Length: 520
Image (cartoon, rainbow, N blue to C red; front, side, top):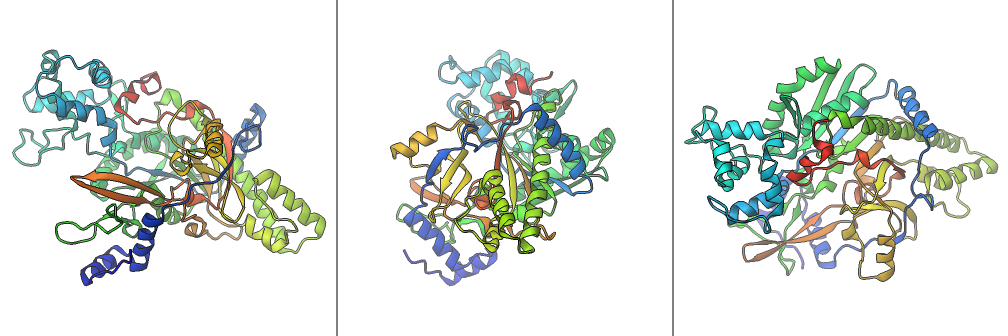
């Protein structure tokens, strides 16, 4: 299909910062699809794709982080725009099925039964209790008589701004529409913490700069900016005085020009009631634009929901420091190699640097590689990625892949990128021993002190297409190459095994009942 924009379309595209050519490219992707990844092998410790450290290595890299990191700017980058809606999927389904007093629902909704049996254990319980109390309702009375849908509604529904019985205009807790970052996850006696606060604490423990500042950047949704700012204002002084730090917290939103057009099953752009084109957010891969604006020597990247209480933080803190020490050590070696290549090395030196690229960095170097080609291969952003042993979690993993030019490289590959119908590809996928917990430490500055344009290292052919129903209509949407998948496809990459204890995400509300998220 050829996209022929109307005058109204052109005006809309201009407001979004999109060009008709870019929209046409997106439509072509819908029509042609994205090619599947060509897996060559699972990256494992046995084939050198994953580095496993001994105790002496851990101690060495931890020390290197303290020494090489001195005077460097350190930043913690946290994608935090995701709403908590999917955390409460089972509660929503239950609430839509049962109105008032529920019958025998245990077999149909076992997750809801577990939630209700343990509701007093959640860090947000006292807030929910108080919320209902302000509406002159006793949560214990409603639980006792089995009116669970009322309790769940008070937890999930958005606060009412008009006609509310409360003094602040809020009758409901609104957890279903809040971002995960602002939900109360953990309890410390009478105090509760949100993931936002747990990331602040983590930052104080392993991302503190030499001047005692802690730089944190959260990507957020525009509708939640006010709530984030209010939470920061509420807790900032407490954490600064507790840890002896100065917090520098910034926010950014996904750029509108990274939105992608929505189409129907015939790949025709969908329009709303006013005839305007419908666009969808481009997924977390769009955040490469936000990351590109962050300037630091060391950037930690971690998902908002992968946090634990203080008693569990020790392992996380150690391995974050270890990964950062490995990154800085590697960066020094790469920078030295690039400076040597600038000086036109002799054949012996060039061969040594080729071995370094092949053996230490897993870079595929062509036969007869000259200094200029090797320079290009080494002068790229660097990432060191923690990988945990695969315990059956859904999601991506570490693989050796081969691109359309025949180049072999280490990549994080999602299940959706694999051709599972092809037996050999499925065999390789199933042979994966490790899982991607989104535990990255990155260097985005080159050896001359300038920052890379990260957009130049994206593989645009690694996007995703998904379908969803909107009434009677099927809507197809497109996600950009994932932030730690295709958006970093052309970075220098190392995979390092880290303990499973560093990976404790909260995907459903009942995950908060696991011992890793309870008081120690």
